[in-house]
Image 1 (cartoon, helix red, strand yellow):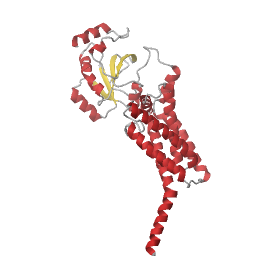
Image 2 (image 1 turned 120 degrees about the horizontal axis):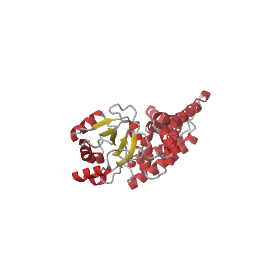
Image 3 (image 1 turned 30 degrees about the horizontal axis):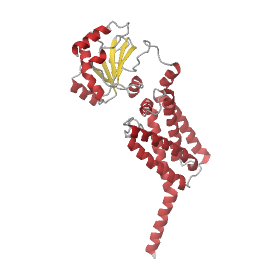
Image 4 (image 1 turned 120 degrees about the vertical axis):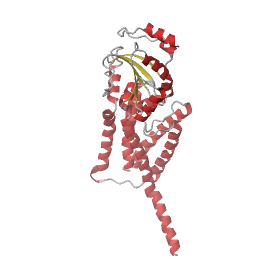
Length: 338
């Protein structure tokens, strides 16, 4: 009898755990994932905006910016609500809707091959759209289970849950403005594109060269980018020619990767690490490698981006008349080395 009683008590405890505790635990887990995801995106807004664009679902820059900002706010609020087990019958349905949007987007990217990185956790965790879609389906199951069986929600004294939700809303709204370049993007959208030849090249805290004086060819790149590596031969030729602007390459790789890259290509021009925010701000919505010609701190021309430049592609470069190097000289030079 005692053994039967023990088995009965164990079964009762397990059943009680499944019905009362597990639904809240699973929804809390999903809430934690959403909160961490929103926190990461708020620190890497530029990267998140680029990743939304890579999906090729939305092309309007205003909608992409507002969508990125909105997702961050929603993830903060819903993540906090699920962690606090705040009114699950109300909080879970919008979380389900959010996951359905994510599943649809990642499924589209998986089907079309639009991007290799889902963008869910930025540079913290890289996952393919297929991996992210499968995970979101699992989380969707957690939420549906919680919506059906979660009966454990309780109010806290002094409206503490409501206060924490309000705090999450404020943080989700303001953190992207404080930690990234979102204000710069908003200003550019409001004021429109800068007139050609008047855009200032800003690189905060860069002391290796005074980019406000003289001409430079600035390359925004990455050491593990195949197009960037293919570009090195042309950049080495440009860097060795005294009559052409000095080459400065900017990356956000770590020091060890930079040193290995310099040794591999025997580079003599400068390859410098810059903060992530500066890197994404300079790259904007372009592709790496992005080559920028500047003169006395003013951007004269975006020469190319994406698939590296070869000799034939440089023949058509037209330099602003304020630069003393003529386009014909560059054409002759690259014709001779072709």
